[in-house]
Image (cartoon, rainbow, N blue to C red):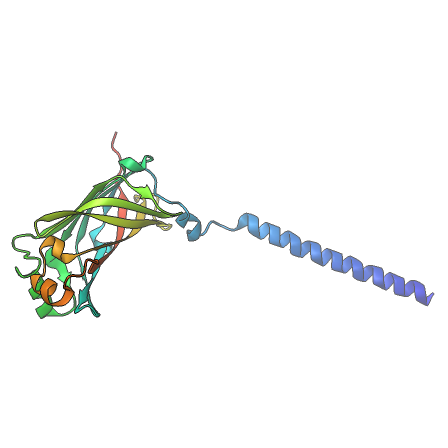
Length: 228
């Protein structure tokens, strides 16, 4: 009789464990089915939907880092970036047209900013803007692209490769608002190629052929609706 009771208790324990395991497994499967897509899922998309996108100057910035006596760096940014981005299913047809207001340069040091705006550097009265224009991109990794666009600065135009990634679409856009895309790009060049900073080129950079200016740009751009 005692043995029979022990067996019954063991059977009840096994039943309880089985039910518990079933519930845990079922809840795990259900959670996978109902979990909403995260922002990271959008980031895996390598380019936004085809169309034209207008850069929002309020949420777009161009940063730079320039060598200072070969061992230091001066960092700054331009606060007004405008332009358009065209996305096409054909990478060769994708294009960029960006304009930067050079007078908005800021290194957080007023005398230095005034010097950079002077004829010794950017000469903003004569060359108020710089532009970057290009057509055609090539894929270099899972989510990175390169455009061999033309940078025009200080009256000089040079081809400067721009490496960029598409960071995704804003998930919080309302139905009546255009889709907003975010991009991040980097480039490097040499100031002497554009005739900028002769004093630096002679005294600081010397004969080095390496790029002495690194450029970083963060852009938010809104899809432009196509009118029939």
